[in-house]
Length: 166
Image 1 (cartoon, rainbow, N blue to C red):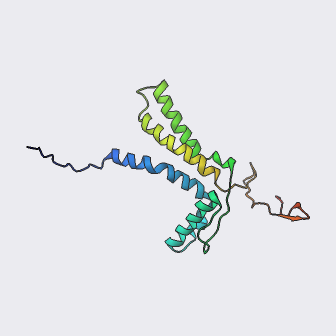
Image 2: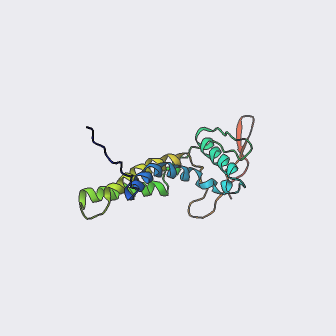
Image 3: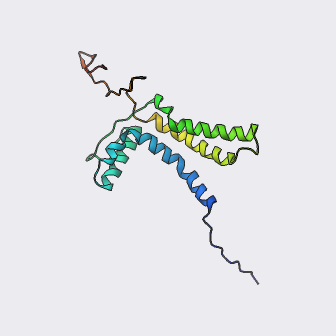
């Protein structure tokens, strides 16, 4: 005769929450870094549908140069190697360094080194990718002044700068 097993209810404890966070932290960091300079445009929309359309245009426009929704703001494709060093990159690298420090030099002293390291390994590549496709920051170092992107207009195949930085 076969024995019957009682089905136990799954407990949603700290471990389940940590697994969920581990799964979503990378995509969230990527989206946050990619859209950080466009949040004012996203939040200026009146409906949730329009916000979703602008967010979709930000992601697909910045990465592929394709804007699926023509009735809202469009965004060009951007590649910004300087954007790869951002607050999330430093956080991910710091978390990995904390993990390695606790594992190699101070074993048993620093708490949760494995968990912190696993989060850092998900944050770092997402931050690098999000920063690479992020819109460039046109600011002059040390002055606190931010300027718009210079516009170029050409005559006879020559580029002439129309607006210059003051």
